Length: 102
Image (cartoon, rainbow, N blue to C red; front, side):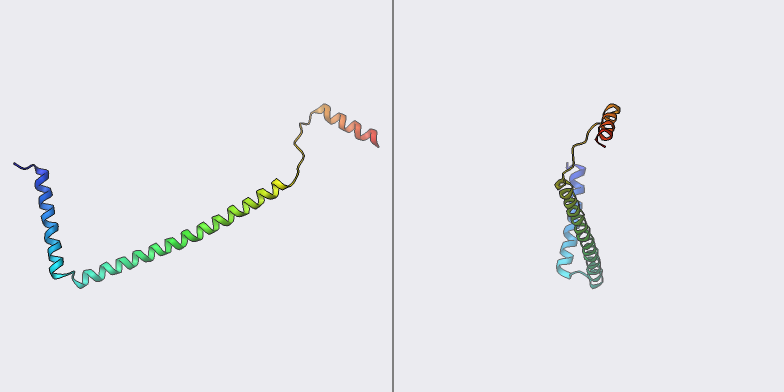
């Protein structure tokens, strides 16, 4: 005796085959065809809009990354003295040196 899953699968396959044969012989009704075309055009329009937005966003991101890269290069090209630790004794010595030089 066939299992329940096999019976359900066979029934679904039979219904799908009947629908396919009906569409093959009689075609898709014009109302359904028109609705399908409108839905496809609407979806294509949404996809086109999303692609336009994605393209603009990526161009903005590229511009930002380029600007950050240029800023990084400008900062890198400048020569800054290495940071030094200032302590109270070194500050006193520096002030003494400056006052002795005058």
